[in-house]
Image 1: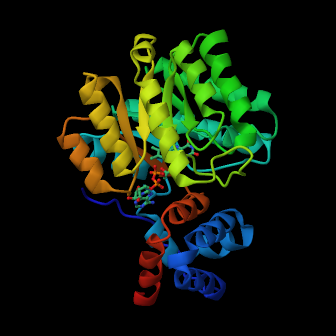
Image 2: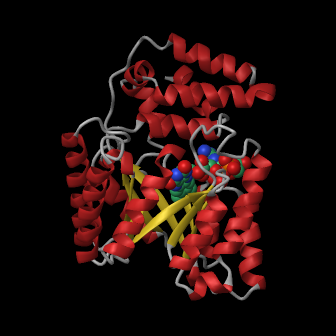
Length: 344
Ligand SMILES: Cc1cc2nc3c(=O)[nH]c(=O)nc-3n(C[C@H](O)[C@H](O)[C@H](O)COP(=O)(O)OP(=O)(O)OC[C@H]3O[C@@H](n4cnc5c(N)ncnc54)[C@H](O)[C@@H]3O)c2cc1C
């Protein structure tokens, strides 16, 4: 697949702290992966680090492996290439917690425009949105109004909106907005996300199955305390498989549940493949989802095997936190980052 071209950034000299953090992280890598992850999660939220790294050309070079580009045209180009390779996509206009009503409206308007572009270019694409980007942390009613307008607009185009799930203090409000739109307003083109690291998710899935929801299942990307989330990966993985089987149960499918398995974990994917084959579940009753730029080999092989695959494609200028979270998920990617630095 051809890579789109990306805008160039100016180089920034004050990199020493980042390199020191990254290098020391790598020195500790064997025993200290968790430590390194925590540093990266911290850096993803730190304004000073964003300021330095966002203006650094090499950071953009590495980030562009995970981000389609800075504008809608770049997103459309990537979308067309993915469609040609047999993959669907979900577009994400990058941006997280907004701090004003005006910022939330700007994000809403951009998302409306991407819906128009998807329609104009007849892309096999839907859109993922983040409630905090649309005002959730300012006022849940504001987020509900903005998300409602987006879902209505998508409905006019016969398209679908996935409401991403963020950190646990927003889970109830996010599910409430979803339920309001789905059940009070009667919009059927909206779905939610469940995170297998949360203890509460099994109960949430039970209820969403009764309601016949479209659910994306992921492990969860935020640093959550042990009071609300499984601290051990083995439990997160076990719960992922448990929840995936629940969403594929006869009762769930009969109720209209459409599960989307968002993971790059070959073990989760293999187990789901075995479960669906053993239970004669047709491959059009669910889909696999992966992030743009991660495990392209796996994405392609699933398509070849006849599975539905949807790629989550982020675009926009606010790529920094998204990019650093991807490094946190797999600190080995830091090698790529640092080797590019020394090569440039
Ligand atoms: C389409 C999609 C949508 C998502 N939406 C949300 C959401 O709304 N809310 C939320 O909290 N989280 C979301 N996530 C993130 C998700 O919760 C995980 O943080 C992320 O997917 C890592 O978990 P994993 O299951 O892919 O693999 P992990 O359990 O982290 O790792 C298992 C294996 O997967 C592979 N792998 C994983 N990450 C990488 C990587 N970066 N580079 C290379 N290989 C890798 C490796 O082989 C690794 O050994 C989403 C993920 C996807 C794919």
